[in-house]
Image (cartoon, rainbow, N blue to C red):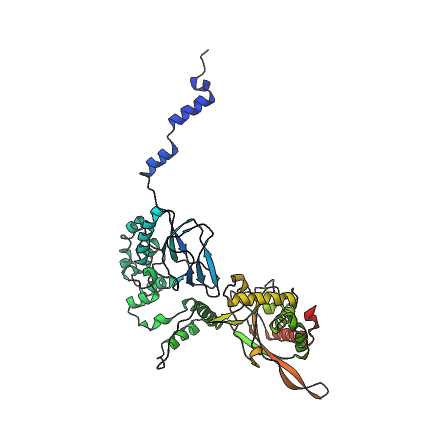
Length: 468
């Protein structure tokens, strides 16, 4: 009988060795398929982060790491001023800060590179070359350069496709609004010279190329235009009015620009206002008792509002898409606070569940952080109802503007001695304050708001429940 084939008689080790000799090495095979191996420098970009949901650009307050400094993952390298606070920004990689693209005091849009991080000393020179390419608006790598030349011809046949070459080059050569305008006015972006930071093409550049009068370039809130087009157009018209002789133009800070944007957006919401008088004699007496313990009148009002809101969930609901209710699970009272150069609303989260002493301690911490511009995003953008109190300034009544994304805001005036008549017709002098609530009429109706205010007034006029 014939002997079995030889390969079957090989030992496992011999068979493995023979297979290794027969098969090409994975790396060698990959090298033959891909061609010569290219070693690329490790240069990473540090981007402007989005520190809040409303932030569109940030201002560099200071660099904690200078050019040439070696940093480790998690180190704070820059302090950025968002629309509400100053925050430390950490690096996600180890390396050397090779180039600072946006110096302290200047601004950059969210997602734009603000610095380049080199992996080693040998890569610093390449990072400098890449920085020069970014500042001139040219692509930063050879493959992108090779891909760019064939792209310009198509726009002559189909001008709508002009923004396509931008996406293959350096990030942000043209802003989204500039691309939209280029399509609308059939402008070839390849032939437009950008005047923005790092050579970016701005809407003003596109309009100039299209021969449009430069007066429209002052539209400072393009994001608000889809929400409230008629109102957004009114802002630029005011900006082009002739200046009064001797006047000085001061640009908005990041916080003031955010407030302006929110106020313009609020004009698109159908609101109504309801006022209600509230007697405060007993509340004033309670305040005198708890004031030595650090409890402020603002905290008492926030607690009373939270207790009343617990009975009317629709008042702290919101309408975010124009076609549905959003019922919030927490009663978070945002309280308007004036700070140097702007306005911010620190949030007392779950105010209905905390006693006035814990609320007061938390409120002091929030105010301290707000004035130092150190609030975290969840500490100022999580409000579901807003309270604005100007009573300490002697204001007897005012209307507040509804913040975007909320259902109602309460404006509280000062408590003042007022002549009142009881049910038997007898007159007396009692302290009274007026509260006005502005509400989104898409979700809150008059009866809802009136019932809420009646409950709020009962809590204020008999405030013992505030101390429970």
